[in-house]
Length: 330
Image 1 (cartoon, rainbow, N blue to C red):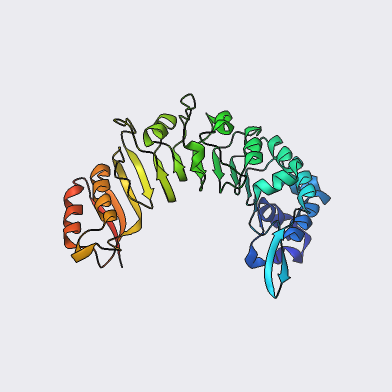
Image 2 (image 1 turned 135 degrees about the vertical axis):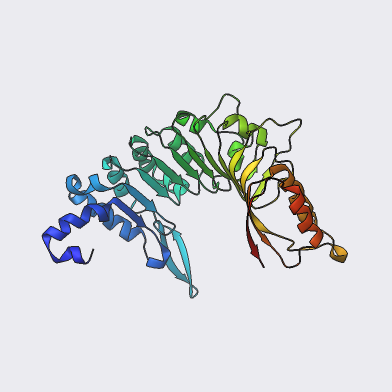
């Protein structure tokens, strides 16, 4: 960018690339509402030459926050003063493919014009909205775009809906990747008529439906990730799920996981705590059962130096299909 400022020809060559992917609100860069407003006004000053290049816009945690000193300490409070000009820019961002908004729910509640402008866009392929609520779900349901990737974050709007996934209904054919950070309750009780045949990747945390219900809703799923702080409803009978998953990542053992897995990634340490007299702890016992169920070809995991030898022997015997082991020893 500095080189582009040296001459008109370099500027004209560089600006389409510079404007194609823009991130605002990184606290480390002291970004904030002022920079967002300046950016929007810069784009709108020459919309024909500038706005058409915008492909990705990422509004991070500092984009709508203003710092204040309170009793000598820095505190942040919401500042949506740039929301109106942002809405105006979005109305003209016809080529926008990716949108990420960290403070989506409070922004949409205070300035509905933003989500109304967002809903009019037709080229969005990836929609990432964090701090969500009912206004966010309304915005998703009204999208004219057919995104392939939808990401939602922490629920921040009173009681959370259980099983209300109707906002994703319009994307039955387009949705390929769904991320629900700490708001898995949206899939806690899936309505049978909702089926996403093309969705291949699900990343989820929070309270989660029975795995058999996930399998009915996402029959062709290939990659599944459970984030920390999740819980899965227990099956009430035999579970009919996927014949096999390509990849499963989890932060806790799932003893009743009903499908084999080609690659299993454990995001917790085996043997980190031990029972009395060097015995297995309950987590290790659950992990052993989980491994027997999953029977992976590839296993990535972390072993504590306190893990009992008997646990290692059981791991070896419980996964006859194992061919590759990626091991971190702590």
